[in-house]
Image 1: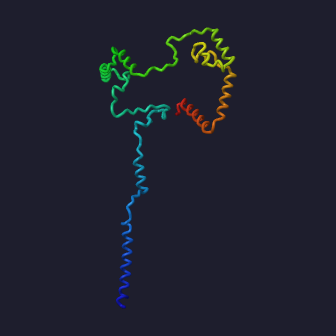
Image 2: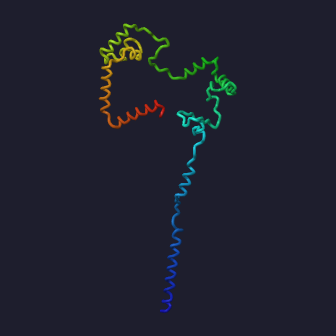
Image 3: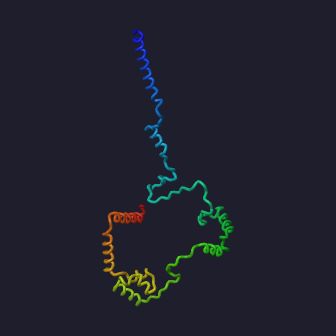
Length: 225
């Protein structure tokens, strides 16, 4: 009986020590997961924030800063080949002019063989597109009476005698018809009315897209885009 009473405190002490040892070993037995704190994140972001090179920045020493239009000259690390440098931009003392001349002679692009080289180039190209173009010698075959007839037809029935129909009848360009016989004001007002009716059937997306296109065009013409 006395031995049991003496062994109970010892067994309770051993059990408590075992539980305390398991609590100490629990962090060591847990899976290893790496976490990055705010200090490491901030340091990494600061290292990635690299300032641009000075050649990409505008010249602040010039008096009219900031300039409206500025040209950034940032040449490549290696010198360009004479094949990619325009011959007119090479100075007379540049040795690349001689290199270009030798290259033209070896490749058959000299003045003596220019016709044969042009023939070989034309032979390798696709056929030319067939569309009406103005001849080298323009024709001035329309008289004052014919111009007056053109204007009369255009004013009487602008739908039947359109720009294309008049150009086909009088054998002239459409630009000349638009200059010599413009459409009457009533016809232009009717076209504008038809355009407004057509645009009234558009949805919100198409209307917004058209307005954005007009805004981008104005910005491009002002040089702000």
